[in-house]
Image (cartoon, rainbow, N blue to C red):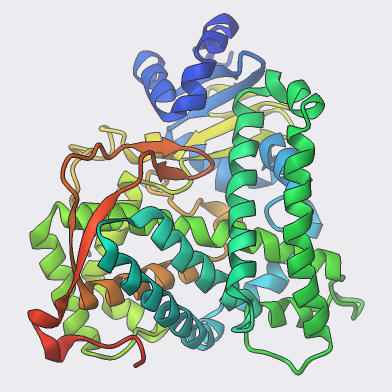
Length: 458
């Protein structure tokens, strides 16, 4: 006989739905403490889900028997409605084919090529950032969002993508993501979203962004080949020799933009916050950048040499994983040990909970990069900031390159400190964002060490 899974009642789940909309991590942590590492919960009092932070269950669902677990309605239906069919929203052979084709855009050789595009984009973003910091303290979250989105957008579409177009697409993605979260956590409001025109308004926003990107795709079809990710999509060929349609290139481009920018900007925001409160660690990261890079720009070949900076990033991603949960739907009946998972069950892997479990992470709320030092091991599937298994993030190496590149420039150019009197708190949306932002004061390092400063033009 299978072991029954402890359950939060439908009524209690419904009563928790406003709290879930405000901060699902807190609600799920409360029930993890009450019921253990795996329990049943009803999203909005309606949609039943199995919530888990158990690494054995996580490994089974995301890797060992991944074929039996498709992405759930949250991503396939809700995200698919706004983003079309692409890597994030398809399954089976169609997904495998797309993944294989797009993977070429993130191999070592291509990341070396993209490094130059990324550095050019960052230099431009830092010129604007310099102007912002002269006015006074800045909220680093939107600033870093602009930097990372511009970098991902230009990695995809090349240097000709206009700033105003980047702004429109970025705003659309952020607004639509928030709407998808509301649709998911408060499903009883969906009829109201339809009759009130809220759904239509978000569809119109998406259509405008689609139109901007489609124009770039059609133009590029007529131009000489580029060295960006769009070229990878345009050059991709199926077994019959046919390429992707413009519509599919658009869907994949939009989904890469969605997956690619907020992960890095959130990771960087929390990283700067943690470094600002741990000056010894900050000094050590700076020393490593100076030792490995000197005044040179960072390229992909430098990444393996930055061991301590990588440890710091891994620990920041443990404390504040950008994707705080991963959801799957069981295709057929399944078992994990003594636990039965019926066909049709939604499984929520609570990444944040797994990253903060005291059973696997001693003093889990403490920032300690030494956890990821060489020789230290942690339980598999308790640190999964980029997901795991065959559907792990295709752009994980790109994201690490991007975070290290931006961090290396910021740390070599500026001193920074938190603005006093703030409450720093995380808000789990699709991404784990700073709830009220993170305000900081930045000053250039020229006064301290003029020879070390690398200008934006280098």
